[in-house]
Image 1 (cartoon, rainbow, N blue to C red):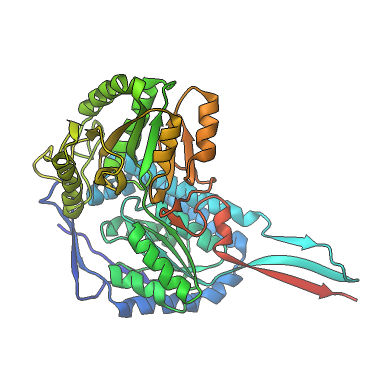
Image 2 (image 1 turned 90 degrees about the horizontal axis):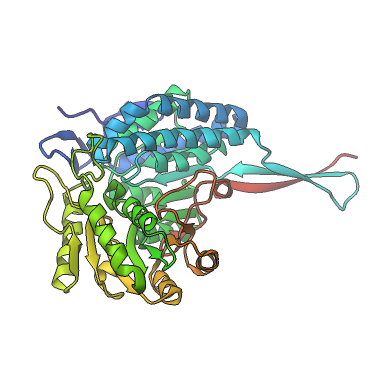
Length: 480
């Protein structure tokens, strides 16, 4: 039985209407059709933008405290229903249930975090050089924000765009990825239950043409995007050409460097966690493993053993570590990378291109050894449970290879050498640097963003992102 899919425009639920039909299939059970619906048309997108424009003035004039209270209430709603939301994401896109529930809880906390920011001062009183002048600054919302979100984190990424946009007084037109319509609707239901006024957030289920319309529309003052580097660069070009703001979080080719002084067992755990959780479908997933040659053999033996022990299967089963990849397209893409690595002469030490289960898009945790730095699998984003291992002579070579990529999102060094840790943190060209922690992992109060081809504009999360969603106004008032 398929589920009903609806857009949410101007406070009303309405069926998406367009020329393209989209089918959502449970990637862990291919006979389970979750939903089948039409992707929204450009006409419906225009209607959603108009609704956001109509709601913008009243929402801007609403007190910041009241806006924050609504966000906090929505966050509590999500956390209270995290089990239900997690089950939706588990079925729609195959994320293991425990991870999906944890993500829903995190998303609720994100809304609460930004809701609390309404109680902090958002301006300054300044001394004026002119007599009897009261000089102060205030923040004003940009207006209408377009939020374009990916499929791999259906709850948290949506909330860390919508939350700061709303608390600063903006209205939102939100286009999520079409893979998880029920999860997106659940976020909308939380905002609705919190009392959000009509038109303040408008959900439009759609494909590329909806995202393109949002990026191009003159009424949209800012576009916040997360997705592939190719699409993100195009979104940034389109929005910037009409002088709108754009903030794009994109791909990664994240490396772990295992230093000769590392705790090898710890390093293995970090690589397994970073490379194989969520079936490697994270922009921060570990994709390259650089290991000092003198400890390579001991490290690889333990890494391969751990990878082979991981349970691949039903994401609703608590014993499962690796669920399916999201759909047939991703399944074909990941297997293609592995097959071409084999054809290039690289050694598969664990996993491989053959599916590990029948009725689902399952790829076993795969380790590719002795990979050349210029190989496709060492340079292009795979977005699957695949780790390429490359030996290096020392930290100099490791840093050279870490930085020899078009991406610059997240990197890790495993070491007990404090000098090596500090040098790596200083010289790695990435927006997120970790020491003895996985490449995958964020904290809502810390800026998160990539360098080079991993990010354009300011980083997300934390308080810095509030600058993206606001404009400054200086007010000088002579009182005598």
